[in-house]
Amino acid sequence: MKISKEVKVGAFAILSLAIMYFGFSYLKGIDFLNKTNKYYVIYDDIAGLNISNPVNISGFTVGRVSKISINQEFENKITVEVDISADIILGKDAVALLRIDLLGSVSIILDVGDIKQPIAPGDTIAAKVDPTLNELLKESALPVAEGLKVTIQRINSLLEDFSKNTEVIKNIAKNLEGITYKTNKLLSENPNSINETLEGMAIATQKLIMRLDELETVMGKYGELADTLKSINLNETLAQINLLLKNLNKTTGTLGRLMNEDSLYINLNQTLKDLDELLIHMNEDPKHFFAPLGKKRKKIEKDRKKQEQKDTAN
Image (tube, rainbow, N blue to C red; front, side):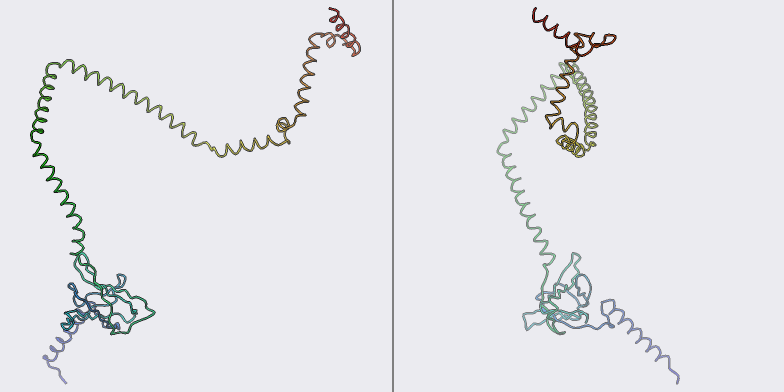
């Protein structure tokens, strides 16, 4: 059977229209391949919401607006039909928040609520509307307007004070004019003195700069000293000192015994005393020690007794 050109053209046109319909629907967010559930939301004002606007959860698109209708029987409330992915479970306390961003785009933000108590497809979701952008701007502009009003009032009060004190301002201007005249006259009549003064100030400034340079050098040395002190491990030094004092308090070492035991001190003192007597004896009677053969102990004691008797007689 031969198909005419008219049938082929008609079929091609129908196919093209179908492709265009499904393509535009896909671009609008309609996905014919995924299963969805319908829910309803009733708003007092939808603020420019249109069909195919997205429905999001935490910034992720889970559906779209499929239909919008007005209910004149119920004070012109707007019923919005939304198609939500069948994978999404909504609780009884779910809320559909209508939000407008800074660019004017309108979308619905879903708060799924407690999914342990889910609602069935076709039920109504509670509605909520974010403050519009104009309302936000009004709220932000109100404090600015109040502040501007106060500022204008203060400026007006200041201008009124100026108008009331024009004579005072004129006198101030005259005084400034007189001061300027006298200053110019002084400069013209005493140029040499002023030059000397300026030269003196220049010299003083130069000396001050030199002193500041010296001070900077001194501060640099102080900085080096501070760095050196900072590099010393004070904790370790204190620990070593504590260990030394602890060892000195013990009686195991020589210094510890010397500090803590009286016997060592007494013996040492007696030794020094005996040594002192020996040196005195050696100085007074060197012949007892340095004679060719020396002297016996008995002879030395006999000589010492004779010396003592002689000293007693004198």
